[in-house]
Amino acid sequence: MATFLSIIRRVYLTLYNWIVFAGWAQVLYFAVKTLKETGHENVYDAVEKPLQLAQTAAVLEIFHGLVGLVRSPVSATLPQIGSRLFLTWGILYSFPEVVQSHFLVASLVISWSITEVIHFSSPPFGVFFIIRYSFFGLKEALGFAPSWHLWLRYSSFLVLYPTGITSEVGLIYLALPHIKTSEMYSVRMPNTLNFSFDFFYATILVLAIYVPGTASFDLFLHHISPICSPHMYRYMLGQRKRALSKSKKE
Image 1 (spheres, rainbow, N blue to C red):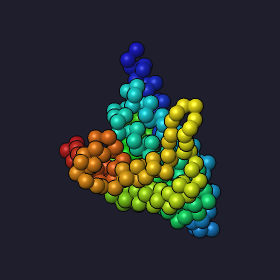
Image 2 (tube, one colour):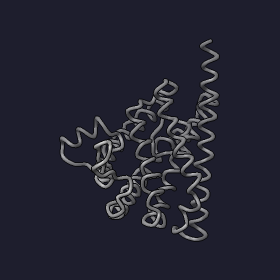
Image 3 (cartoon, one colour):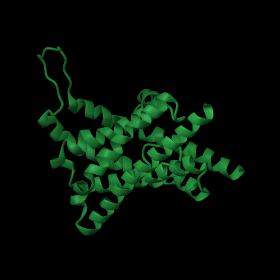
Image 4 (cartoon, rainbow, N blue to C red):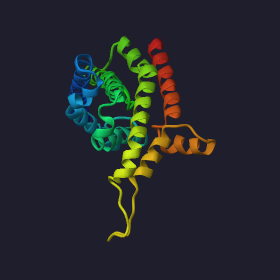
């Protein structure tokens, strides 16, 4: 029975990784093609649907952690996936007139997609999709990944993480004035629930999470939010060192 469940798990994760890999590969292809042919102003229109589908599908990774299909802790996966969904739906989709034609959109989707395509064949870092999903796809299907893929999986973030984070922060910042004036997603009192919510200040809080601050605030971010850029970058450097050292010993 245990062997059967193990086979089902491997088949499911293999299919999931390669399907999402295909989605991110499509995002990368359309982004590069559009950037070359018509410029960065049209990149978002070219990748909108596959980007939304591929990024939203990552919600399943939270479920995978909850039920034990993967070893990734939900406490790390949830903030990473949440920040991506916030950018995809809360910023890019919600405020098209402000950010969708900006050059940062091109750098964002290219950084995200290359990362994920490599990532889908190794332990998840939210930033690496094409690298990530191909890595996990190979590992689940074959039980191993080539050494060059392992190196790529744990080294691509050195460039892609800073470009991705810079693009995310820049796009959120650009959207702030319009978020404030439009009051989209904000809830004002009085209302039947006696509840208020200001999306503008919530967005500022999200933006602050990316930036290192005081020692006490950094301590809070260290325990609560793995998307904080300095902490996450140091974490990934440690993961890279351990993974590559282990591969050399083997």
